[in-house]
Amino acid sequence: MQTVNIHEAKTHLSRLIAQAQKGTPFVIAKSGKPVVIVSAIAAAPNGAKKRFGFLRDTMQVPDDFDRMGDGLIAGMFAGNEP
Image (cartoon, rainbow, N blue to C red; front, top):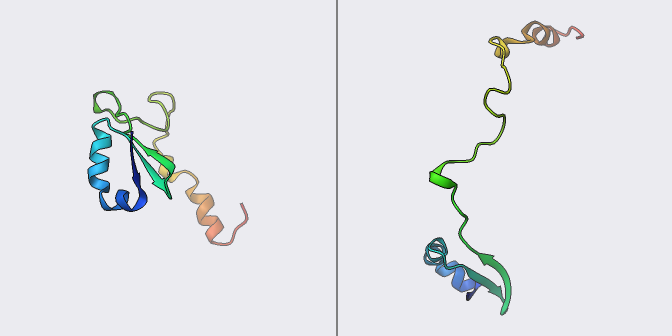
């Protein structure tokens, strides 16, 4: 595995990243001591992006979701206790 110092990594970062994307990881060293390994991250299959959050069809959102509690909130802005 190729080892480069920090200065060389900064100077040639684009080229080094391109090599890592092609499957050739490298080590960045500081004062001759290895600090980090840079390698490509495996892409999701078929270029699909991972979804975070709720799974589809597991939760129902009411039609008035964006208006829920309007009266309570307006009252609080008017100084009324909830």
